[in-house]
Structures are given as C-alpha cells and as structure tokens.
Length: 109
Image (cartoon, rainbow, N blue to C red; front, side, top):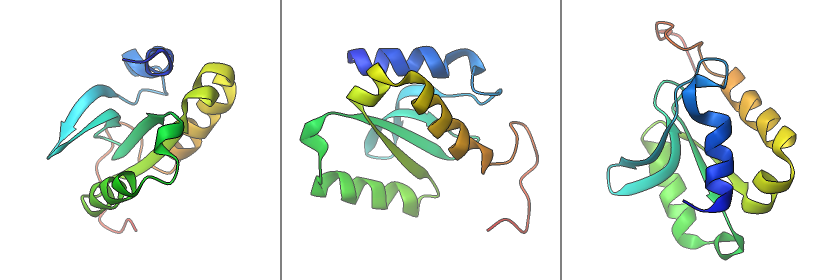
C-alpha cells in the first residue's frame, strides 16, 4: 500500500466510520479496488496524478457502477494533507446508504 492508502486505512479499519465495514485491496470481478464496503456498495480509490482523466479508470468506474457500486476517488495529497476533509467526504457518501446491518429497502432508488 502507498502512504496515502495506509493513512486512509487508519480511518476506515475496525468499523471506525460509524460501524461501516471496509476491506482493502479487495477483488471485484476482474478489478482489485483499494477499499470497499460491500454493505454500503461503496468503492474508494486513492489516486495519484497518473490517474487524472484516465480512460481506463473511467471504464473501470463504469463497470463497477454497473455492478451497483458507487466509486469515490480521492487524491493522495488530500488523504495525506486533509484528513478531516476526507473523513467528511466519506461520511457524506455513507450517509446516503442504509445503516450497517439494516435490511435493504424494496423501494430504494
């Protein structure tokens, strides 16, 4: 893992995000994602500058979205220098999900 991935893992591990469980370096079909909460259907990728406007990342994101995941991309520099801001961004994304362990709603959009 990169320094940024290690820093983000310290925020995500042990259900530290209001009880949501995250896994790191997890395969989803043919892709390995940096972090995923299967309960929240949320993938978090931590990227450096080489990913800026990457067509392969756009294809990967489209595939993951077609499988029911939301993809949140964070920059390495933000994870390392703006931990509070990154925490707020992730919590905002998780707030749109059912609480951990809740039964899925049949009328969710």
